[in-house]
Length: 376
Image 1 (cartoon, helix red, strand yellow):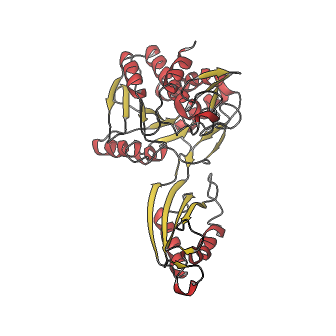
Image 2 (image 1 turned 120 degrees about the vertical axis):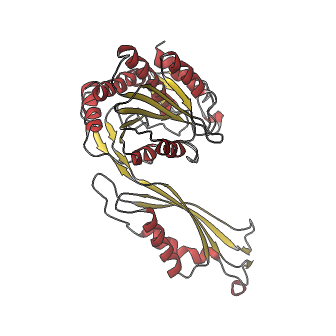
Image 3 (image 1 turned 90 degrees about the horizontal axis):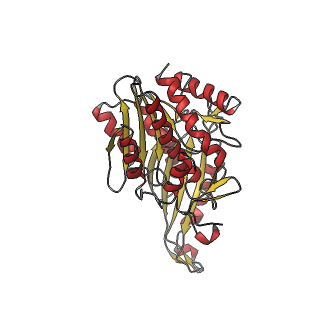
């Protein structure tokens, strides 16, 4: 069994449902310490954050990942236990196999191999891991980035191991992400009997025209290297459970994924203007998940592109699609950031998996990028 497969299996076997790390970072920290890395825990609350570095001064290359996973859902829906790593038909199955314990294991192998081959390398090579990427993302990399800013820790280049590939390893390179802005809207009405609507005020009926306007709006036509911004309602909840009661309030959860043509504060103003124009009595709480970012042409993007061409056989597509990642907290530190990882077809699904052949190639891919950046 290869080292990267053995470590990935060991990580999957630890049920690190967010924000529980379940001992993953302690395992990795002990291993990297033996390889000569300085390992520091920067924990906040229940969230584990590992910062491991080798070398000093010079340019700083950071590999960024997370050890937490989403809940597996009903275990009986899986063909095998989600926390018992299982190989079949050329794949490794288990929660986190693709998102992103395979990439984390590959990072560790790449770092070990790099410092063994170049013990006196120029610059600093680092690994940053959190157990709060799949959850609230409050006490993880967001807080670590604030801590880094306060103590003057810079990062020049950052490679995130999120599963970015579509059909084969290396066919897509993420060079940025849209921003994310969430809202919790509570529309207030007056509860009453459905037979006497004149004595009540139905918050569902009141909310619908405003929600229709917001959901039908085309917010923009896109932005260079970004898709169009989108507004999506993710949940509407109201009622007492009885079909003869007009509810007293209606709660609506929604989210924007937006490109650099917008800022969060401008979107907030637009939404509130629509709600006010429709005369709603409401309360609205916002959560700014992160501003959009994009890495322009530079050394990291060029290095990743060429390594992927050489080792994966073709130049990758380069875009800013998909959801969001912890890279949104590292980019504001001034770092060039890209995302490169395995195929994402099974992430967050039952029977999540990673191809064994892809897993074996990942350490070489990550190490080659490190060599291009730090040894050039």
